[in-house]
Amino acid sequence: MSGSGALARLNRYVAHMTQIEVIFHEQRGPLMARLQRIVGDRETAADLCQETFVRAWRKAPADATPEQHRGWLHRTASNLALDELRRRRLRHPAVLDEERWGGSHPEPVERLHAREAMASLTPHERMVLLLRFEAGLSHRELGALLDVTEEAARKRVERARGAFAEALRGRRADGPLVLFLRGKHDDEAFRAWIEAAGGRMRSIDHDSLDRELAGADALLLGASFRDIHPALYGEELRFGAGDEDLAADQRDLRAVRAALAADVPIVGVCRGHQMLNIALGGSLWQDIASEGAGGADHVSGAHPIDTGENSLSRTILGRRTEVVSEHHQGVRRLGRGVRVTSLSGDGIVEMVEVPSKRFVLGLQWHPEHTDVAEAGGRVAAALVSAARTSPTRLAA
Image (cartoon, rainbow, N blue to C red):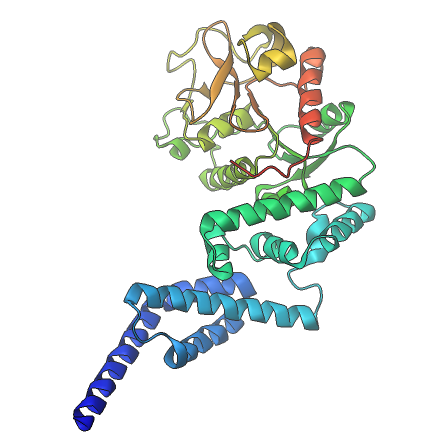
């Protein structure tokens, strides 16, 4: 019996090791991608991947299912990567660079404020922010690393982001910071518009938005002469001008969705208004005139609009105001949770908002134009006022 029992144990061990080896080779690609994203270089990621395999041979639970073994491998790899980051921090304190939390701002005092705000956080809050925004971990990956659910990881990121923004705000003597996601229009016109309302504007691109949002008070989505590629809302290009850039539009879309998830105050202008709707699942008229969506000229200056009752638009602008529009596309199918609060005389959507969010406003018209200084000034004042409020509420 003892010989038979020993043989049975040996067979179980061989089966276990075979399963571990099969699953490891199946997961090697995803493990390498995760490790390289966390530690930043392929050579270190390969070393950690091999160490994960060694630990699997030695310590992986023998009675686990294949799915449990996959989860064990990814948790082990993430923990090894985190240990590597901790070792680097001990050798080089700027790794997962807290110095970069001044963002792209050219002023040394702004960078100093960001570093001081980071230093005021708890070690766990700093770790969560650095892993999310510097190492680039998704909420799912961060959850696996912390051994919590994806939703719990998202909430931890939002709490840490809120604590950082609050600490940063307490160190700033001037107005709230509005990030401007660049379009093709003049940055300076938007800058003057925001500063006249008591805010500050920093121009960024989509690649840096995710990290910059951690210290921002609001987001402004700029206008552009370039049309949004209709592939973003599931249509073929029918009325293109030839300057569409799908890759750039996809990056913008990810950036806008990140801002919506963070629940920072947002104003989208013209193209930014259209991108807001698409980010929430909506679509556009590719060309208003060609598709018979409206009869008026939407590129020739000022015209009146009415605002809807019990809306943010009505609160800001009153019942009727003059606006300036310059566009040939417009909102068609509404995105999830998007409410139309103003239409032009020929039925084109001029303003939208998202009531479930703190402050999200889309304007098909141009509030930065001096021709509509009164209406535009009210929108800027409302955005800056919303930006002054605490961001510590969790994202919806």
